[in-house]
Length: 138
Image 1 (cartoon, rainbow, N blue to C red):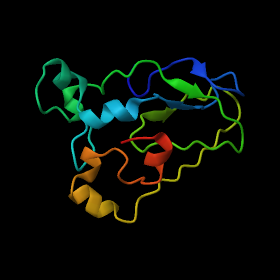
Image 2: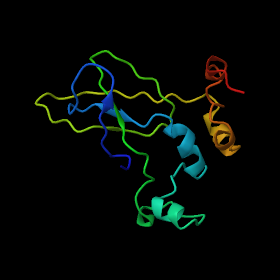
Image 3: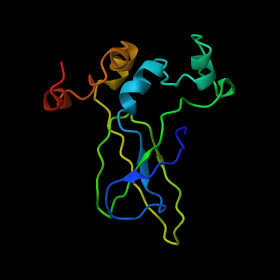
Image 4: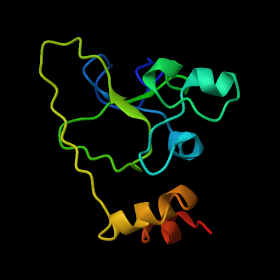
């Protein structure tokens, strides 16, 4: 499905349907090539199917199909660290309890300059210099 699609993979805790965080593992790698810089809009499916260079507006169809989402079945107090390009959404909450999530978006101190220079378009990890060595990236 699209970014709001359903899947049934998961981790631990809830059985699902309780507002879980849904992610598409590895989507940050694919999405980078489909994004327009510097605004970060994603190229829509119709433009990809017709192999045309534009197609970033809602009128150009749905977002690319990323396949089924992985539902992260988290417990209270769990923390998820994810790359800012990772496709994600909240799953449906079919339970009687409210599910609270808190997002923190961290930016490099030089973020504006990185965007202006298009660093993020060329290097997925430029704003996270401490991550590259841990992931053993070139």
